[in-house]
Image (tube, rainbow, N blue to C red; front, top):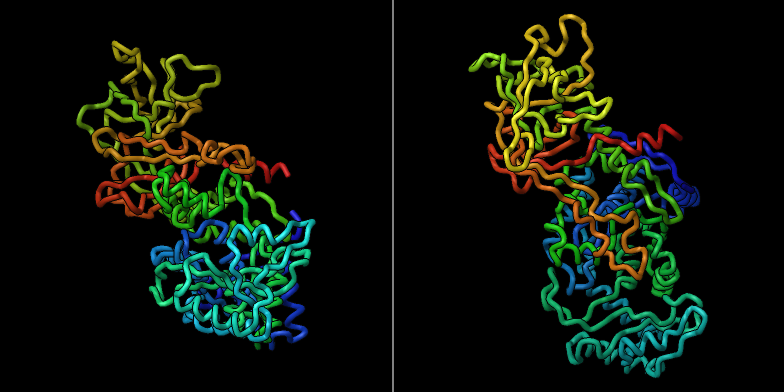
Length: 575
């Protein structure tokens, strides 16, 4: 992938995380520092619109803006571009603050809103009118689109473009005072209707909209467009580098035109980078909102969603997401990143620190006939073989245990090394057992109980005579286990690039098996007091976390974060 460099994550003396970047954006900053373009300053901003929850693509932007500023001993603002009150809510504002902090970044006292500048933006618009660079237009939205022209045909001037300065000032003031209906008039910049860049063909910079704003209430009935508010907000905050995603590249001439035409003191520099596109995922806020509103998922924090809150609930950590953003680098060209890389990052982290536990998702009862009734033994099981300081825990063992249904086969194929009639298997850290007989459901023929014998000399799982037993399976004591709900998550979409084909509704590409809920899973007793957010490796099954919403004291609900299979590691090793 072009222009990508692997970044390093370090911790500074204050234990805050910095993402270290070496890329084309840093090269631009280096040039500006050498030329003293901004007085040896680097000041960035993360400017979300509060009209939805942040997703993994925003995480990349957060890491880039905060990380590159920290690398250059600069500052980063958090600014909400709240210029469209019809779609914005306080709920989204608070969720965004939570997500940025959770990722490990701090805007300190630099929290701003575009709505802080509504009066200033209005006065900027007035100034454009006064210098003959803006006019009130009465064309409808459809007419404006028609007059705009095409990529190969120039636009046509509005019949209202020649209004006098006095008339425009009067009409704009009356727009502010609420004298006109929504959509009846707009304020447009007067630039060039023949420009090859459609964004420069007299773009709309103010519209009439009667909607209650989450901060200013009903004080305003006209609101600035994003392309107008954004560069001027950057300038007011003395932002040096306005780092945007690639779709804003065509808007950069308008960004610069406004700063130059209004002759503001700080002329911020817009720099574009490729947005993050992730396989088997949609990143469009509109589509994500549709998934939530229509009930295809259980909310913005559904663990199948690519939102930061969804990833957090699923068990992803800030460190794993920052590492992922570091590995994908910063590119100039759009591409799709394999979801397997994100999963690889969380596996690497959890492999090093997650406690190993035993849970049986689809239980099958096993009775060890030659084991004494009422006898309870305790076996020491390592908490994490990857961590020498993790220690051990004691797990109870009794005559009746549960194993996973998948670990038994009545008619096994060749090279099947788990439990089968007449076949031995090792119980993790316990004994070697041998299947002696079966009990089946009379109606369905399903095996419902397996009777085994055990080798008393194999305590700890080792055969006393040195015989080889290849299979090792996990288990829980039936007497001590508790029932728990486990949720198994898969990709929300079946297609690696959902929505790419305009002839197919992206909703038709939803994976009907993206969530499987198991309600009678058997867990080792120590998990009963697990707290929301706790993370574990269920031996042989994957990495799981305790759900932060539906879990209750003594009744944890477990979400599978990711399976043990690591396709990305296999691909990387082949390369």
